[in-house]
Image (cartoon, rainbow, N blue to C red; front, side, top):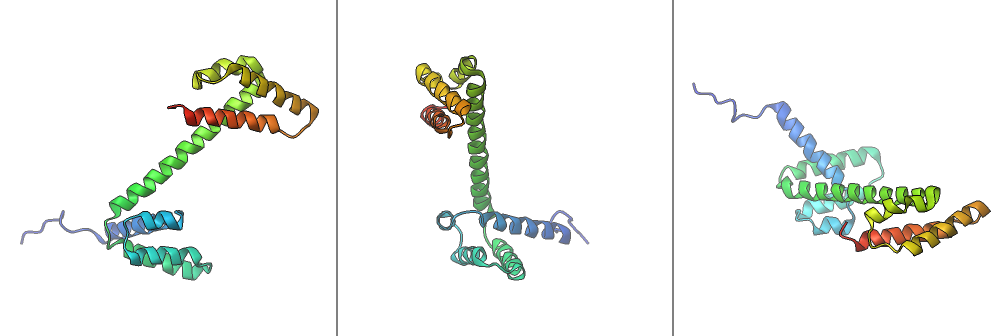
Length: 167
């Protein structure tokens, strides 16, 4: 009797695949309703996802997530996985860029003109005089215990530079 082990998938492997599809479905719950509608998923799965977002009972939510996992088995999960990965990558990138701007602002406020070369290395088109003015105003606000209006303007200016550059 010819028995080819590569053709048969073990029960454990099937369980892992079903669990992975269920986890993918859970990640889809983080998408907005409009983003979900833009994905190429069957209407029944879309309705199940939208319903799961509204459920507050833990046991009912758990049943709904299992149902979503079951529905995920009937579709090609590759495009959905790609959409989830793209969203996660975009989130990581924007978080990293935000932290860079925060770090640059803090360095400008702590070091003043000594931090300008680093900022200009990131944003060569930045207006040096405007940066100095905003830093001076922000430092003055800090020392006088005033609200951080200039510090916020400095951050906004850095964000504008970041969005305008091919960074």
